Image (cartoon, rainbow, N blue to C red; front, side, top):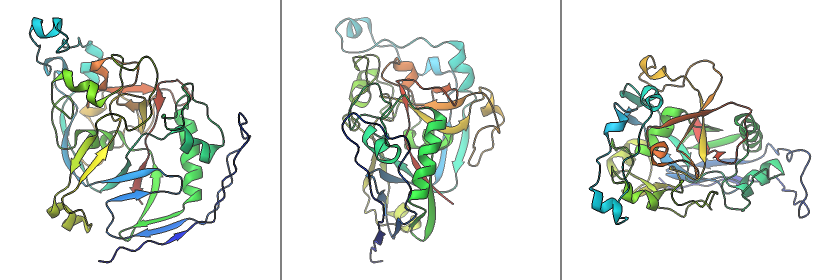
Length: 321
């Protein structure tokens, strides 16, 4: 099928004077329409890149997470060639169990990178981040702040149609996030159990110098989409790899779900969306300030919806309506 792109962009961006902050976000234009066919990726009006995550099943959570790490020999640790296994508190074991099968029934698109300060500014007209940098992830925003960003962006781009299906912006569910970071793997990390490789993939306590870094500097999580999957999805992939950066570390990432440490024992198998209410929202991926245990694929954390901290941000998803 011939790839077709239709852009109608009527929005204008107000550039503020240096050091200034807008009192209100920019007004939505309600005029951005994009109809894309056979598309494995998507870039929106403010440069946020998305990649296709195909539907499928995976094992969510971990049983006995403290036992997944194989202790390296003492000499390797002493020579700086390996990291010792982190110690796990009972709290982290409890909220990751039981390991259970989950099916994501619909493909979705996930941000290739964490949302940056420049992208936040383009919509909200301000930059609340502590560690300033145009391409650093935005932080010091709350879950509720993120919902306003998403609301404005959905108003700005109300008609996103990809392969004949209508999409809207959202945070990923917790299940979508873990499905994406695992990319078909069942180990503690996408790259396996070797903690010596973590520096290649994540900004965390051991290498971050206690701050965020520009997105996309570390190795990505890589999704391998086969030609057979492409044919099912109706996309032109040609067995290409789709990359997700900074899924581990840099900033914790908000998800859509309320947090319940016992949710896994009662969650549905298909497309779980978390409990109906709660006190905290789930965050995933760890941050620049967390240790190796907190950046594992299965590790869960949480923040109150109004809390703003300099180590929490977000990654957007495009969800089929």
